[in-house]
Length: 330
Ligand code: ADP
Ligand code: DP6
Ligand code: CO
Image (cartoon, rainbow, N blue to C red):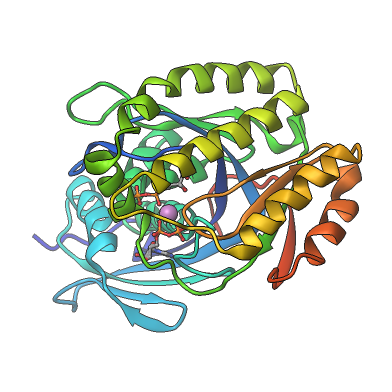
């Protein structure tokens, strides 16, 4: 089988990173990459991936280039295999991608990376997929990527179906429905030593807190949905910090421990709490890495940026509005 592909065989897509306010950690089914818990996130305008996919008849395997270097294509091929099956082609692809922020460092490069790949690969193969299908496709690359198909606020459903068909994300709000700001304090540009996939597997098998993490997810999701519907920023922020610290308690109780924080991470958390004591509503959240993301109102973004920039060990503070969903550039 080598049928000519529709859509010109090349497509370029951009997808933005996202930050979870109620977090995913742990898998229901590792092969399908379905999450053990649902999650809610905001998509970040300032951090994004651009990915070009070209299906070619002359290749004997997929080729993956990330930020100019030839990289392992295993995870990329998992997504491309699904696209090939749906498009009824056996052509391999050249995938060339750039992240405009550090990769594998806790800034959700797997989220923007696999959302961009899903949109570009579907486009290059001539498939027209609904957002829900794109979200499922992106999930096979990385769970958090299912949310980056959507702009603004998104919720990922853990689902119950054995085939993973109900484990997808949906949009809750457009960016303009509730324009928040996020300050991203970068304390380390290097890659984390234990990636998210491996880290969450270890938490599930070794932490005595893992069951409680799963059991308490539904309450956090319901409260976050209510805070978003009511545009209650203090409630959203307080719950984001709580859920983040609960995740890090799970990570710390993993054997061997997952300590994703450095000294600047902890210092930045205290600065955010100090801002609040001074009357500035600002709330932190931290993923699997040492970077601190601070949620604030647009009117306070200069004050928040200034305070974070003074923290010893913070190399850079990137300010972001809420961003759009994944989309084609070409
Ligand atoms: P992060 O915190 O950056 O999401 P992860 O450990 O979850 O870190 O994922 C990092 C992995 O995601 C990389 O090792 C790579 O396999 C994949 N990845 C990162 N950027 C891209 C990209 N642009 N396209 C495809 N895969 C990517
Ligand atoms: C802490 O989506 O990177 O950022 O599905 O194994 O690729 P894989 O994991 P990934 O995990 C994200 C974990 C998190 C929380 C979140 O984004 O919800
Ligand atoms: Co990731």
